[in-house]
Image (cartoon, rainbow, N blue to C red):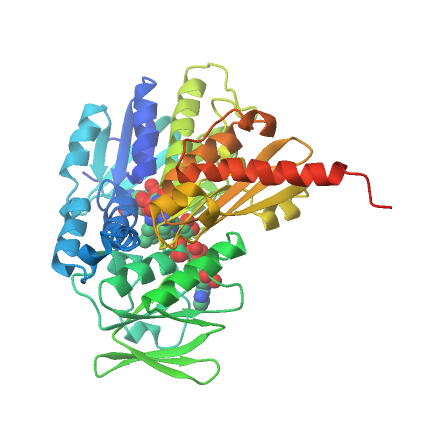
Amino acid sequence: MTNEAPRTYDVVVIGAGPVGENVADRASAAGLSTVIVERELLGGECSYWACEPSKALLRPVLARADARRVPGLRQAVAGPLDVEAVLAHRDKMSAYWNDENQVDWLDAVSVDLIRGHGRLDGPRQVAVQTPDGDTVRLNARHAVAICTGTSAALPDTPGLDTVRPWTSREATSADHVPGRLAIVGGGVVAVEMATAWQALGAQVTMLVRGDAGLLPRMEPFAGELVADGLREAGVDIRFGASLTAVAREDGEVRMTLADGAELVADEILFATGRAPRTADLGLETVGLTAGDWLTVDDTGRVTAVADGWLYAAGDVNHRALLTHQGKYQARIVGAAIGARAKGEPVDDARWGVHATTADGAAVPQVVFTDPEVASVGLTTLEADRAGRRVEVVDYDIARVAGAHQYGEGYRGQARMLVDVDRGTVAGVTFVGPGVGELLHSATVTVAGEVPVERLWHAVPAFPTISEVWLRLLETYRGRQQDQMLPAEA
Ligand SMILES: Cc1cc2nc3c(=O)[nH]c(=O)nc-3n(C[C@H](O)[C@H](O)[C@H](O)COP(=O)(O)OP(=O)(O)OC[C@H]3O[C@@H](n4cnc5c(N)ncnc54)[C@H](O)[C@@H]3O)c2cc1C
Ligand SMILES: NC(=O)c1ccc[n+]([C@@H]2O[C@H](COP(=O)([O-])OP(=O)(O)OC[C@H]3O[C@@H](n4cnc5c(N)ncnc54)[C@H](O)[C@@H]3O)[C@@H](O)[C@H]2O)c1
C-alpha cells in the first residue's frame, strides 16, 4: 500500500538472481532480518536465460562430439540431434521459467520476498513498485545490497530497431531453429551459441569485428582452437567484419558490412557484451550516477557511498561476470554485513574470510565449446600488464596418454604461467575436449598459491588427461635445467 508505514529490516537485497539469493541467505544465516526484492523470476538471468538453458543446449552437442571420437561408438551417434528433445530438455533445465521451487527455498532460509521493481530512495531506503502499482517502502538498519545483474548491451547500428534482434535471452529460449543465424560478436556468448545452434541445424555466420580473434580476453590459442572447431562444424566466421546497417525485409534480416558486403539471415543475435541494470535504480538519490557499474571494495561495499551501508555483488560490480564468482562474492558480502552488524571484527586482509581476494587472483571460467576452454588466474598478457615476471610453459595435451584414451584425434593445448619470483602458478589455460572438469585442480593450485615444488607430490592418475600437469612440470624443470647448463664455449 502506498501509504503503508515503511517496513524495517536489517538487510534489504535488490535482485534475486543467484547472487542476491546468496547474499540474503548468508545475511539471514548471520541472524539478520532480511528481505529480497525481485521484479521478474527468482533465480535471475542464470537460471532462465543464461547458464542453465545454454548448457542444456550444449550438453548434447558436446557429448555427441566426444562420442564421435570413440572408435566403436562413432557409428551409433552418426545421425542428427533430436531437436525437439533437446529443446524440451532445455525447457526442463530452465524450470519451465517458473520460480516456485525458489520461493520455497527462500521460505526455508527465512528470507522475506517482495515482488516488484526496487529503487533506492535515499540512504538505507528502498521503494518497491509492486506489479499492482502500489509502493512498498523499506528501511535497512544495516545494509542494502544491490544484486541487479546485467542485461545485453546492444550497439547503435542503424536499423536495429526494425529487426527484432535476438539477445542472449532469445538465443537461450527460442522454440525453433532458424535456417540462417547471424551472430555479432566473438566473446563467450557468441562462441557458445554458435556451437549450439549450428549443431541444432542452423547455418551460423559469425561477424567478429577487429583482429583480436575469438575469446579476446583469453590466451590467443584458445580462440584459435575454438575457431578451428567451429569452422569444422560448418560455421562461417568472418573476422574484421563491422556491421554498419541492418534491416528486416520480407521476413529476412539484411546486413551491410563496412567493406560493402551484404548478408542475409533469418535471425540476428547480438552477443556484444553486457550493461549493468542500474539505469532505473534510484542511484542518483545516494549521489551515484544512473547506468554506471558499481565499484566495490574487497568486502563488497560501494566505495563512492559514505557510511558503508551500500553493497553491490555479482555482475553489477563488473568484477567477474560469472555466476560462481558472484556467489563467492555473495557469501563474503553476507558474512561481512553480519560481522559489521554484530560489531565483530572484519577480516578483510588478503585471503581473509571477509575479502573477495579471488576476484583479482583466481577467477575460473569454462567455455562450453568443442573444444572446451578452461582457464583460471592470469593470462600471459595480463601478467605482463601487471608487471609479474612469469615463465610461460606450454604443452600439447594430445601427447598425454589420457587424451588418447579420451578420444581418437584428440586436439588440445595447455599453458601454465609460473610466477618466477613467488615460485607459484599465476594462471592456467586448458583447451580440449573434456578439460572443463580439470579446471578445479588449477583453481586450487592458483588460489592456494601452492609452491611449484610441492606440485610434484600431487600425482595425477594414469591414464587421465590430468597427467598434463606432470608434463607441464617436466617441461618447466627441463627449461630450468637448460638454463643452469654452462654456456657452450
Ligand atoms: C547466455 C549466457 C550464458 C551464461 N553462462 C554462464 C555459465 O555457464 N557460467 C557462469 O558462471 N556464468 C554464465 N553466465 C553469466 C551469468 O549468467 C551471470 O554472471 C549471472 O547471472 C549473474 O548473476 P547476478 O545475480 O549478479 O545477476 P542476474 O542473474 O542478472 O540477476 C539479477 C536479478 O535482479 C533482478 N532485478 C534487476 N533490477 C531489479 C530491480 N530494480 N528491482 C528488482 N529486481 C531487479 C533481475 O530481474 C534478476 O532476477 C552466462 C551469461 C549469459 C548471458
Ligand atoms: N560459460 C561461461 O562461463 C559464460 C557463458 C556465456 C557468458 N558468460 C559471461 O557473460 C558475459 C557476457 O558475454 P558476452 O559474450 O556477451 O560478452 P563478451 O564481453 O565476452 O564479448 C563481447 C564480444 O562482442 C564484441 N563487441 C562488443 N561490441 C560490439 C559491437 N558494437 N559490434 C561488434 N562487436 C562488438 C566484442 O569485441 C566481443 O567479441 C561474459 O563476460 C562472460 O563471462 C559466461
